[in-house]
Length: 144
Ligand code: CMP
Image 1 (spheres, rainbow, N blue to C red):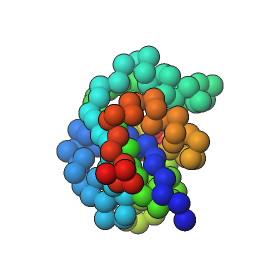
Image 2 (cartoon, protein in one colour):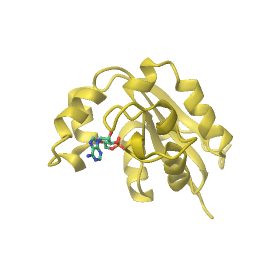
Image 3 (cartoon, rainbow, N blue to C red):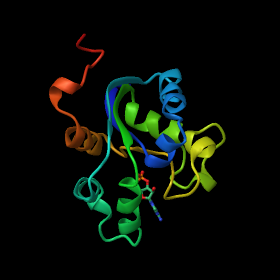
């Protein structure tokens, strides 16, 4: 087992529902620590670039519109196998398929408004963290 870092985004629907604290608590109760965090209102350009991998997908324009519809909380989470652990805590992308007790089961409305994003691999986690954070905005438990 390895200590990893991963990127989490609490999306506009969950920020509007006032459940930032409840979602962060889920991470903390499951062994992940928030080691960097900020509220941002993404520009269209930022959202397009962040989700560039989905550019050819039919839902891309809707995804970008949704992610720029209100502020988001971007966080760096750290812990044992953080990438997989975060995805387990989030639940399936489509909340209709999400397991009981997961964030998406409890807080998400639809596959678009699905409350949270989490990196899907260690490599993507590094790139996604660097997309939003400078080195001096991250406070690893391994270094303090
Ligand atoms: P996220 O983990 O942020 O990554 C891309 C997002 O696209 C995904 O969550 C969903 O909110 C959204 N999305 C909309 N339609 C689909 C779909 N058919 N398959 C995957 N993701 C989708």
